Length: 400
Image 1 (cartoon, rainbow, N blue to C red):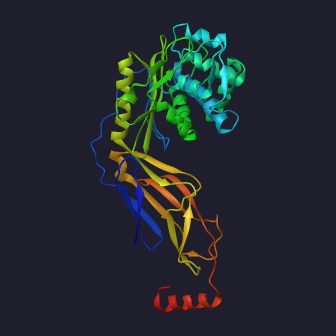
Image 2 (cartoon, helix red, strand yellow; image 1 turned 180 degrees about the horizontal axis):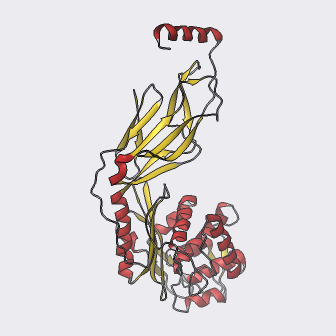
């Protein structure tokens, strides 16, 4: 009997599975019988909570209702820059000249980085002015520097939104300030937030910076704090972005990581700034407290070894072609099972990449996922003499 282990992302507990020589692995996930609370009652017009790894929706309240994303728009503004940097088409050290159009936003009462006309500002400073200080002037300066105009930049934003799968979003500017056609949904904002975190992990570090100081022209340096209230609560929050418009009230895209598990919450229409903070944290804490996420497989990472017959190796490693995680309410974990199914032992020869098994994930008797397993290596057959001896031994002794 071989014992393997499967990690649960949000705690240090391990879930064990056992493999028998009858070629079926069955493990039950148990001993997590924490008290489960009812769905949270969030004081916001619309909201959603998703698990980063499994994409499981843990909570939703009218998630496809149209919203004005306000400064959450700046997540996409940052993504466009990050994407260009990743493709070596832009550098953090590149500089752009501030136009009068960008400068005027710093004089209009909106949140600003306080850049001046003809300032030569680096992409890195503009990004920090956008992410930390939520500067609308920095958004326009970056957009104009990258695309020539904010209208052209908005087209880039919409192309990326379509690529991500944001089906109910339309961007008309880089900052999210008042425009009735700049619209989205909390579901789309959650998709965008995951895309940001997954694809630009190094740049995402900027979103947890609590302060940014801009050495402005013609005045003392201005130090501004990050507007995300969860960053100051020591709860593992590292993003993402606040928003506010009088017509929409308060909004927040937020994310917390605990151990290896991450949740993303987006909600809009909080009546007050304090409720934006407390209700977002309540939603995230509810998710961690009431659900668990388990790693079933990682793409191209061998976890399982299967017994072989007439091969030059006693076992062969197998892999999946996709990452797969499963999230479940803790009250339902006892109903989950995972089976490793194959006809075996695996008879040599086998070529790398050949499908030879599958993982079956079940909730009671319902199959919720079937993952093909492929050979991660070639398995050559033993020579004729060795094959003959092995076969005779098996016939006589019942053991290869």
